[in-house]
Structure formats: structure tokens, C-alpha cells
Image (cartoon, rainbow over all chains, first blue to last red; front, side, top):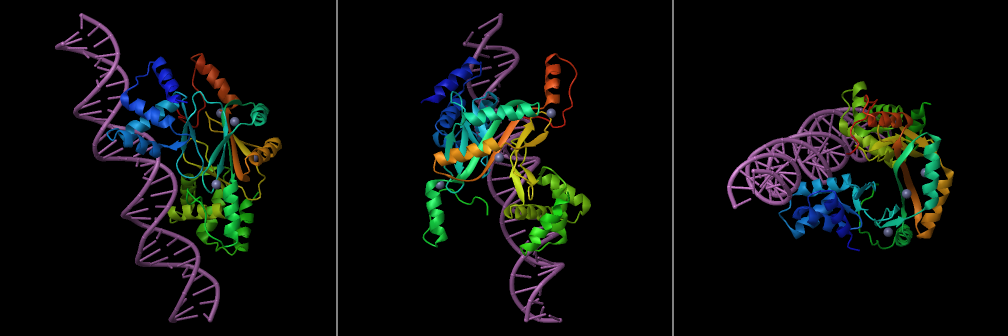
Length: 161
Length: 161
DNA sequence: CAGCTACTTGAGACTGAGTCTCAACACATC
DNA sequence: GATGTGTTGAGACTCAGTCTCAAGTAGCTG
Ligand SMILES: [Zn+2]
Ligand SMILES: [Zn+2]
Ligand SMILES: [Zn+2]
Ligand SMILES: [Zn+2]
């Protein structure tokens, strides 16, 4: 909890100036599990409307360069970010219907990846492993829809035709 | 080879009108391994400048809806597309320095994925598994650079600071 | 504390990629 | 050939993200 404290320490430790704006951005970002840049902008501005959009983007880029924030592409909509500092490595499983995201760990896969890159003489730097499917609730809904019954609990729309 | 023939058959078989424009887009797309939408636009227009950008995008969307083309996010730049019809499932390994993309298969991982989704009660629909690293050539280059020697063979620039 | 420099910021212009609109066109069917 | 549906080209539009630049702020130095 309070993961922003560790982020702030790390930044200070690296001699990066921690302005009021940056502090606010860090704290709001750390409050999310996953967020888009524009979500963060709105959230930050709801606390201090004078913070410019550019500042949020710049800070996000800074955090990314510092290895504090990771960028995810969940193929629907703009990329998601996640404050991963002091968080164990994990991959993601997403419900394409309602957008729920589950973080999972699977050491077996992590090991196999090393095999794969060795096979091609590569040096592995990073990876993403994303599973897309239907959560239990949305499976129900789909079955109901098939029977032409009432609609669902969709809180994320669209998702490609 | 000539994978566009299968694509064209499939479209016809589904009663989708195969206009001259669509045919051109399909054939140019099938000539690539991976391509971005804008690359495809340029390529198509180099064969017939009268084809509008919108038509290329529309056709791409059509092919995607029909399950003929897959969309990949290799996190640097705009998404890549790939004509996957009649191609065995595979995942990707990319060199972050030079952009080389290797397609690999790893049945062990495919199996483990089923375990993972079962664990959370999900129904798996699709997945992406991307490994990022340095190819053999780029590893050399990096070592040379570390010794402050001459530059490399970079044919893709930037790649985040 | 005044003066200096380097870094950071807000505002807004700008860009690239993709989407949307709509009138003109092409096709198939009758 | 008239009618209706689907497709196209042209261009306006949108959204997310980047860039520019003058003004502001922090951290030193004397
Ligand atoms: Zn992993
Ligand atoms: Zn769901
Ligand atoms: Zn796979
Ligand atoms: Zn390489």
C-alpha cells in the first residue's frame, strides 16, 4: 500500500526534482491498477485543474523511462499504464466483454520463454503475455443473449465487430 | 505461396463482393509478412493511385472482421497487421534494435494458457505472446558501442529512451 | 539575499493515424 | 432500363499524443 512513497523516494534518490505537479501525478497514478493517459489527465485535473495535459504526459514518460511505469496494449482503445515499481512480475488476462483485467503469474511460461529466445540466439529483454476471453459473468450473459433474453452488465462498450 | 488466392476464394464463398480495389488490397497485403496500415496504403497506391486511403482502411477492417487478418501491437509505432488465413498459429519475438520479427511456436505455452484461464473461470478466446530482445547482430553492436566504437546497422530508429 | 542558470510548466499549435460523411458510382435483379 | 443495395473517393473531422516557447520555479553561488 501507499506505493507512491517508494516512487517518490526512488525519484529523489536519482536526483529527479519532485515538483508539486509530479507528486500529484505520481499519487493519482499509484491509486489506479491500470489506467489510460487521458483517464489520468482527467483524474489529476479533478484535484488541480491548473495542471496541464502536457505535464501529465511528460511525467508519465518520465516514469516510464525510469522503469516505474509500464505500458500495456490491451488492443481495445488507447494503451493502459500501470505503476509496477515494487510489484512482482505478472501477465494479464482480460475479459473482452466487460474489460475486467486479472493479473496472473505463471513461472512455467517464464522459463519456457528463455528456451525460445535461446533457440534464436536472442537476448531477452522483456515480454508481454496477454490472454483474452470471457469472464464467468459474461459467459452467462452470452448464453442468455443467444436465447434472445435481456441484455447484460456491459461496462465497456464496443470491442470490435 | 499465393495466399491471396485462398483469401479471395473465402471472400467469394461468403458472398462478399470482391471489387478491383479489394482485390488489389488483398494481394498487396498478402505480399507482406507484417505491415502497418499506412505502409499498405502507400503500397496499394503505388499500384493504383486512385484507390482512396479510406478504402484501404475499410478493406483492412473487413478482412479483420472475417478473421483473415490479425492485428499486432509491437509497442513501437502503429499496429502491425498480418494475413494469417491458412497459416498455423504462432507468436512473436522481436528485436527492439533492428525490428526483426521472428515467428515461433511453443505448444507447451499454448497448453499452460488453458490452465491459467481455467483457474479464473474464463473462457479463452485469443491471446498474444510477444518476446522483446536483441538479435544476435544487435548484441554485437551493443557490445561494440559500449567500447565506444563505430555505429551499427540500425534500420529502425528510436525505441524509447 | 541578489543574480545566475538549468529545469519545469501551461497554453496552445501541431501531427499522425484512423474514422466518418456523403454524393457519385457500380452492380446485380428485375 | 429502372430500382435498390453495396462500395468508393474526397475530404472533413476526431482523438491521442507531441512539440514549441515564453513564463515560472528551484537550486546554487557569491
Ligand atoms: Zn511474464
Ligand atoms: Zn466480464
Ligand atoms: Zn500462442
Ligand atoms: Zn537486430
